[in-house]
Length: 275
Image (cartoon, rainbow, N blue to C red; front, side, top):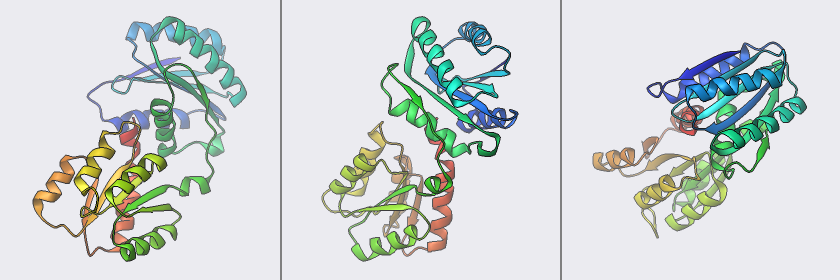
C-alpha cells in the first residue's frame, strides 16, 4: 500500500489530479472511499495497517489532503457491494479511534466508467456539505452522461426579455435553467435550488446585486459560482464584485459565444471550489 500526503501549500486542484491519476492507474474496477477527518501522519500509518488487514491482498492506496482534511482510499478490483462493506468497517473504525467530522462516502467504478474530475468534486461536496457529522454512509452512484449535462443555472435579472433570451440559449445547450426577477426572489431560489452557477444583474429591485452576492457567498451550504452579467461598467463595481468572490464579470451587451465559453470554463473549474 502507498501512503501519499498533499501539503497545505499545494493548490486545491492538485488533490483532485492525484485522485484521478490513482483511479486511472487501477486495473479493472476500482472501489473508492472518501472520509473527512483531521488526522496526523502517525494516525494515517495506523489506518493504513487497518486497511491492509481488511482489504486483504487487493492493491490499496491511501491519499490525504491536509488542507481539506479529505482521506481518499482506493481499492483495485473491488465492486460496489464489497466497497460498501469495507466503508462500514472503516466508518466504525474512524468513529472509535478518531474525530470523524462527516459521514463516509463509497463508490465503485468500472474501467469503462471512470469518473471525471467534476464528478469527484461533486462527491466531496456531497460529503462535506450535505451530511451531518459521522452519522451516515453515502453510496454514490455514477451519473449518466445525460445527467452530467443537466447542470443547473439560476438567472437573476428583472429584465424579463433579456432573461428569457438567455434562458432559451442555455437550455439549448443542455442546462436546467431557472429564473428570478429581484434580489429577494434570487436568494430564495438559490437556497432552494443550490444551482451550479448563478448569472445575475447588479441592478436589481428589492435587494441590490451586492447584497445578493454577499448572501450567497456567506451561505456555507451553497457551492454556486457567480457570474455577474450587468450593464454596470464602472471599474469600482467590477473590483467590488471580484473582491466579494464573483467568478466572472461580463458587461452588457455581451457575446453569447463568449458567455458559453466562460460558463463552460466556470463549470470545469467548480471542482477547485469544492475541495
